[in-house]
Image 1: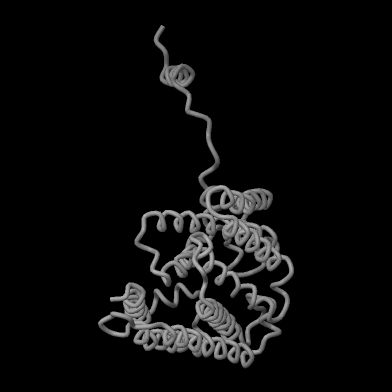
Image 2: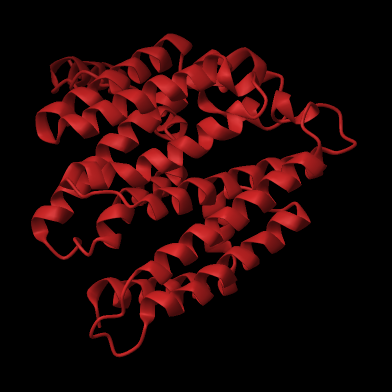
Length: 316
């Protein structure tokens, strides 16, 4: 008897090879990746700051250890983002922009976000203890604890919220030095810490300016800060960062260098701060990486500064 087309199709379906069991949904994996904020990973490049200042970058051993610290810091930062979005899921659903975040939109279930975030938060310090140094492990553990405290409580405390976010940048900058056992200069710490405070306060100021006269705010504390106070903070922080950098530059010796690159780099550093302050004053200094990469003049100044800085460290 001749089989009909539907019967043949049914027979081939039953007898043919079955597809492998499905893994995690691609939508979930994409959602987890988006929640980890890949655009923010550029901040973790700060782990090379201390080794660069000490001229320790050319070595393959140095690069490999810094790459490991970069990955571990990225994992810990992703853990904080996952826990933060899981905790704020209900509030984010009522926000016109944040409701599109994967956790708020339901692409990533809240329990999954908590579970993956917790796993990353524990794995980072543990792997650092095994693969790097105890100092890096302790720093990562402190970073995770501080940032989780920020998510739960500290982001609602005036001034403390600015200090916590700035400290996160400072921890990134010191991690590379701890991984390689490099002594950290007091001027390096002052310049990095207040430079971070400058950018954080400028971002808060920009958010406050953009939300002025509108219902609601992207951050609860923006209703308590005044634009005048935030302007004072970023101006003060910029001044201290410039002073710290200048003291570092003038403290060093030119040695056998053809030109005093260390001192000359002050001009590029100050120009970069002044250029960034233009966006802060306009209220358009959002994410620091977007400001730096989005302005051609600032990017050029940054390249010139890095060249001078590199020549100073190399002693050319």
